[in-house]
Amino acid sequence: MENISTNMICARANMTPPALYRYFKDKYALIEALSERQMMRQFEVIQAWLNENLPASPESFGANIEDLLRQLSTATTNQEGSIWVQRAVRAVPRLAAVRQASRQRMTESLCETYKPLYPHLSEERLRCRIRIGVEFCATMDELIAESEPEVAEILLKECAQVIGNVFTAR
Image 1 (cartoon, helix red, strand yellow):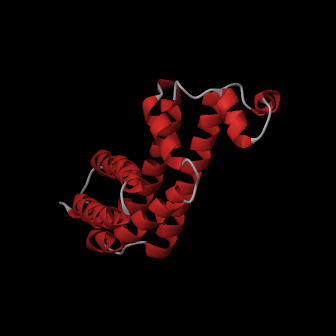
Image 2 (cartoon, one colour):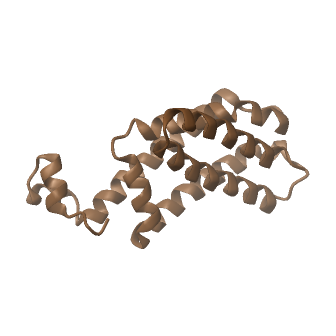
């Protein structure tokens, strides 16, 4: 990230530095905007998936999680440069707040949705499990994007099984 300059970004985007600075203070503001856009797409994928696949029980959650992971992976790979945006948001302290806010938003939304399915869990414990799932999925999304297709397929299946186990555990 430190080796990227706004001049490099402008050359790649076929624009002048003054045009870039008209919209973004610096390269970090641009990466922040790209990150927010990417995370909003991921949130939209999750919301659409929830609308289609709201499980009736904790056991049924695991049955459809692979589909969600596949959709999230597709959303990531369809956005050019997304892997680099993910890496920057994880690596640059200035961008940590964007990552944390997005994952907190996902966690809260999922907590509200799944609370009725887990009456035996305290809200704190459910939130903890969901946050683990959100963080794990984000990490796996990056790993899947970096992998060869045959390895990515195995990773999707294994990730779905792990997440399913987190949510079906008593």
